[in-house]
Length: 362
Length: 268
Image (cartoon, rainbow over all chains, first blue to last red; front, side, top):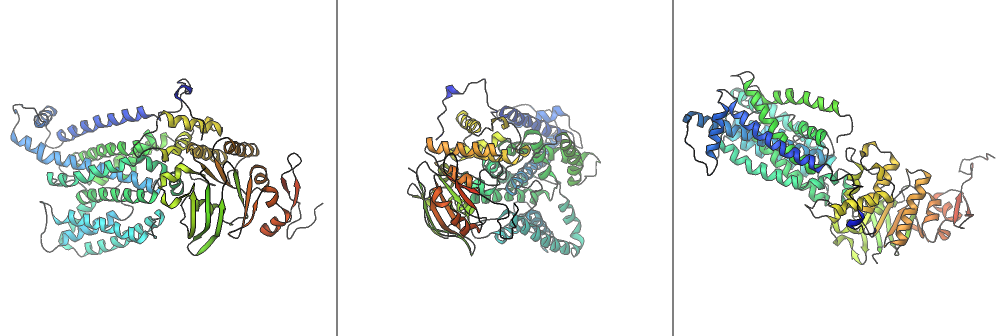
């Protein structure tokens, strides 16, 4: 319909405002990957007891394929690195990535900057599930896991499916109704959880420390179970970057621009809910990551979801690994609840960014 | 070639029927105006044609193809919409929003290339919005946003463009330029426009044909001279106006008189 524009007619002098800072954002991604590796090494070494960086490097290096070195370190050190610290660090990275990406997705779907991964009842459902798991009169578990993570996962998904079916109107899913149903059901489930906790007696301590969130006694089992969920979920959501961009207009315009809005909403909700449920099951409720990381990324690199999602993945991992490291080292041997650290670190940094840029970020 | 055809279309919100048994067909390269009082169903018609609202009964087809059998992307390659009060994400740049018009032409994982960028830039030139390209949408005025959505619709390279009050927020110069642009594109390219307008004078000046809606049904249909009459306006709007031929092109021009309302008093 418009006159065809041949390549010759586009001179390089009058370059359009494009490619939309792609280069800058791709460098940012590479930079964050390097930073992530550095943070992992740091978190392995700087914990108590301290392990020299050189030893950490050598142990990890010796485990890479096609490498054979003679070991100059004690088997105890290797065990600490490979079986205590590595799984904990990897899991905290996975949880950080999951929460950040789920937060960004919910914010995009609901077009609401205040949306967080726990908005539509996942956390309350998971908390109830965990409490029931702790209170079981018999001990039960699968794959070396206690009952709490399993029940938390089931509770989180169960709560969201109830919210989803309550909010559905015919074939459509109005987002406002979904939020309202999520908030209402969440309050109801919290009431039950609190009631059960009051009656739980000596198991209260376990429940309470679970609710505060953290990564104590993590083994490779947790990593093996959560890794496929988080990796697949995050990759899947990242594919929908452009759809999420168009859906920032509103559902009607997105539909008129050729997006299958109802299907996209359903797929993204499912993926974001799954990775949130996995994160909650293994780490409890860690506030703040899901809100602050996506907004920090928006402030620095802009609102384009094609970059926002991968950058949030990396930034979320880095942030939570660092926060967990601080939680363990500031007051050794006491481990501070992780939620306190995420808020204590995250909030001032976020407020600083907010003051720096006073234009629209969302 | 790809004409839009509505046969006995009924559109309803739940049980409240807004449009009842509407039939119409666009002709190639025309600007078809839809006029009528507030709430007569102009915007609802656009929602029905773009499948945002499902049909209660009837059939809508484009070039003989039933629109319910098309995917969202296929439909968006044929029809573009300029909404009345578009919600635009404030943090995106104007150029990014215009570029979103290429969405239906791109594969799921395809990124915009030089061709997409050129088309978007060309649409911005046509709508005189290129100077806005790097501004954030949140910083734009209502009229600028309206021209931006027109640029986005043109970037879609549609066969049919649906405009819902495209001039509502525009100054008089941009009203003229926008409708001139639409009318020229329709005349020169294979584009057909369906425009809901509430300014009867703009409708008379720019539309080849006008459909006047009243209470969800078609009250009058035809050339501007046939539809914009004092009698029709009295019947549909309940307003007393004076219709005179335009001094230059003889098209019907609606003139209002102060004090001619229902409770009016003579002011002069």
